[in-house]
Structures are given as C-alpha cells and as structure tokens.
Image (cartoon, rainbow, N blue to C red):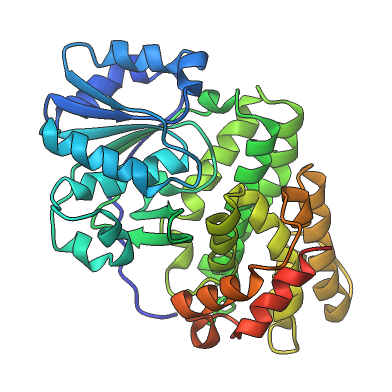
Length: 390
C-alpha cells in the first residue's frame, strides 16, 4: 500500500424523520443567516420544501432556486451575490449532487471577489480563502458529494465541465432514504450507474490489486448496487433498496475506497466532455462509456483485476480467461437491465463532429496520456466515443 492520510469530518444523520427535530440546531450552530439552495421545484411538489422552511422558523432565510443538473456557473454566480449581499452564515443545500456541488463552490465564493469560475479553474484559490459551512439534505443517491470536498461545475459558454476541490466536506449531511422514493426510474438508474462508476474508477488502479482492504470495500459496495438498483426500479418505495443505494453512494466516494493506492480516473473525464457539449445525464453517459473502456483496458497485464472482479462481485466460476471476459459481459448486461440508453444516439448524440475536440480536451485537461490507469491518446478517446455510437 501507498502512504495515505484520511480525514473526513462530515456529521452524517442517516434515517427518516430527523429534519423536524434536528435540522434547526444543525443550521443554527453556524449562525442565523442561511441560504437555502435547491433545484427546479421538485422539493415543493414533494412537500420537502415546506418541512424545511418550518424547521428553519426563526432563522433569517434567503433562497436560491433553479440549480440545474450538470450545475452551471451561472447559478454559482447568482449564489455568490446572495451570500455576499446577505452576509450568509451557512448554506443549506436541499437536493442531489448538482445542488450540493454548486453550494460548495458558492460557499467558497463568499470570500472571493472575482468571478467564481476562477475557483473552478484553479482549486488552489479555494484553499487560500475561507469557506462557509454547508449542510445538506440529500434527495438523490448518486454522486457522493454529501461526504466529500469535490464539485463538478459546467460552463456552457466555454463548453467545459470541470471538477474542483475545496478545503472542507459538508458539515452535516441528512441522508433520509424515504426522500428518494419519488425519484424517477431514469434518475434512479443514472444515480446507480454513477455509484458503480465511482467504484470502478477506483478499483482499476495502479496499486489497487494488492490492497485487499480497499478491494473488499469496493467489491462489497458494488454487490450492493448491483443487487438493490433493480429493486428500486421495480419498487420505488422500498426503503431497504433506497437505504442501501443512498449509503452506497456516500461510501463510494467519501475517500475510503481510494486509500493506499494511486488513483486516476478515465471514464469520468471523458463523460464530462459529453455533458459539457450535450448536457446529457451524467450517470447515463457513464453507463454508455464504461463497457467500451473495459474493453480498451483489458490485457494480460490487467487481467487479474477482471478476474478478481468477476469472482468476487459477479460470482463467476471457471478459468481465469473465461472469468475475465465474462466480467465485461456481465457489466454490460447489468447496465442494460437498468432501462437506460446504451449508445450515444440513445441520448441524442447523432454525430461525431465534436469528438476530436472532446478527445483533445479530455486528454489535455486530465493528462490521460500519462496519468490514466491505461494511458489514452487523443485517438484512443476518439475511438472509444465512436465505439459508443453503436
């Protein structure tokens, strides 16, 4: 194992019916002025908005609504103005990964006088300034942002979707699986694929194969997602299914699965290009790309990873060669079973006209040509995108 330092200070409040008794104190400890952030209004339809506002009675509440999927820098800019103009003490993010991601950058932007896009382009700027505390109420199991420092923000004007890290994880995260009962089949599937992809990106890593503690953790969470995602699609009100997916989301990207290894990702950076250019659903894009990436990285050198994954996650038997190839087939089969598109035309991408630019950006920004699990040239990325057309 590599040397590592692990510290995560998020206070997790897992389970149902905790908002009425715990939310106000969780917020008020940071001060009376709170910015409530949320998306397109689904929390009002579900009744969650009313519950939150009632729980915050007596506090000074400002609101920022309309944060979109693949959160846009425009929302961060609007949030920056609100936190400055109202001298906000704490941000309460109510929603999924997009709302929480944007809120983290807004939390830094209060202490920055320039364009917050600067904070996305260069995370070092965020570590040089303060950051407001963020409390979140999670409504979608997917990104793991509820217990990590990362955010991904899109800039449609520059056709960029970039990750940025900050100095702090959310201070308190309320994880109530019952709040995800109303999540659509599409978003449930997309979220489950996102969780699975986070785990896959960390499993196939330079030092991963000999790290049994980390491998066992990832394999166990993978089995959980594989088992419970189809149940949640069939039975959206199944608490056990929603609870397992929600905790899997958090555990998949809270830092533990990457301990002791050399971590670099490939599929996510390539999908970020798809989202930047076409604004597609992130998890669905990952599901389209992942099997083709597995095909690309498979070799005699990487076969042990596939064999381990096949035996320990997919419960495959037989000789190593058979297990390794069946692992890719089983992954494809499971992804297809989630009833989302498995090709780029299925999400409305009918042409390869942007593939060269996207491939160049993915390689250059993320150094895939020398930093990936299996190095990728611009031609390799373009070929992967072309393979995903059919």
